[in-house]
Image (cartoon, rainbow over all chains, first blue to last red):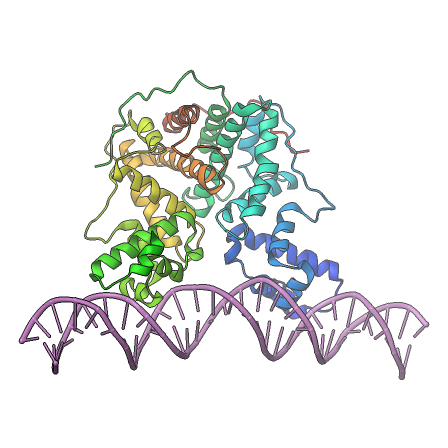
Length: 212
Length: 212
DNA sequence: ATGCCATGTCAACAGGTGTTGATATAGAAA
DNA sequence: TTTCTATATCAACACCTGTTGACATGGCAT
């Protein structure tokens, strides 16, 4: 179909092609890290010259930023609107297939951010996105404070880690339509643990044995 | 000191320079993803021409493989030698600064693998490394079986996620000498949850509210 | 039909990458 | 000292990247 679009490409509104580019770019950043997504790849998929991408978005970084944040006028702040009590269930729901566009987009953004987390060129953008869209909202739900920030960080860890293991390495077999219920249950338990109040003190039960 | 090495560079045994390159490369792959580490960067730090790196290691992929797996003759299999009961404590210990070279190397390998997890050129190598060095050992300790594999995957998720949040985004402030005890306690709890037997069934407590 | 402007193409740039073959040179062996 | 080999350098390769300015061209307004 993208091939069909290439062949059938005619003049159309600039806004339409721009939107097409944005969506295509989104798909690419979803699967490859920042530096591994080439403007030429995007252009080819849309059926357009490379130069047009640079022309419409200014720079690659700007394109990436717009993929994540939206245009700016839309101001897509993913405000999580759940109580602290419902938070674990909400977080688990991020892993389930959904027909809700907002939720899916939220999950996708997480994956995009993750994929480019160690890209020096995209580091600043990614850093901000995580802080604003994940860490702060969760921390606020938890009531703020240093402790809340730490627990939010733990949630983020599980979120990122699971997404890596699930998608970057495609290790859970046959989870085309979302993870099986055992995994969802595990995730729920993990989120509850991460969000729980701190235990008194850490005392390692067994001695930490070195590797052999 | 690396500058000093550059200036003072004299002829020395090939094995020594090779080892120096390997260590320098390790340091780079520890901080940047596969494609963002340039052979020229490594060569410059060692105080040597780029060509020598290619000459000694064959290709960049081979160099990366050797950084992870060792030479092959050394066969650095990180066999975890703890009981299932001590596993959480052991996993937590990976996050603490240690004087044990093996343990630290294990942690470093994890970070390296993580950094290049979404690099298409390194994907195969990374995939194998995780499977052999993390997933399989843990799964075996847990007694094997599909369930064990899933729980091992959860542990991996926490491991990767925490390492990301801790190091790629340097979000826990002032943790130069390992994370504070609260975080260690949290991690311990998380690992115990991840490793625990499955609960009966997943029933979300609260409805999964969409974002606003 | 005639301009004209939005839409898109083309060619080239400057900079970067890993890799290779020919070449230099230091230091040990003769 | 001369010879020779391990060690390292040099120059260049072919390829890829994002970005830019000049150019083409379809379609609408006049």
